[in-house]
Length: 248
Image (cartoon, rainbow, N blue to C red; front, top):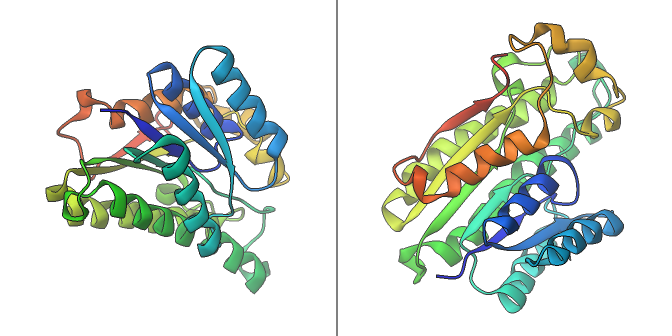
């Protein structure tokens, strides 16, 4: 069966690493992006240059119309979806909860939580045997922050990722008998530019001493965990929350 993967937020960081690795494993990959078309095209170009199949598809996961259009484009250009990686997410500047605005909180949960639920809904409609599908896999990208809470920095982000953990457990139970496995990875301190977008570009280096392995992780290390969860090697794994955090 043809393997088709959608990676939301696939133009950078963990999403880009996952897109590239998936293509090497034989997936046709849809690289979703919101605004950075150039970065998405760079990922797609690298995949094609290596002999793989990939497309770049714009869409804001927090916008339902965009999500519907995104999945329709994947259907039309790559075929029926077999794997979804819910990777799109945001952080914000470091703040205490008593400093956070409503606009910040709404953006945080619209993208990190509602966007993941909308994409999973559309994936289930395509994968589930209940809907005539042939099964598939979903991996949600959570965070070690869901365990740690991120006090004084990103409690809202940690809370959103806690919601992703609960969603992973519930959806896995809901569709486990319909040919769909649902798991999550919880990355720790990973060397990506998401930290700079939150105003702390040196965060990984500054906190590496707190990690038992004494270093930050690489996006490719998370990508390997994601691809394992989607592989036949993980055929009896569902509802798993896999920490990729160096022991932190």
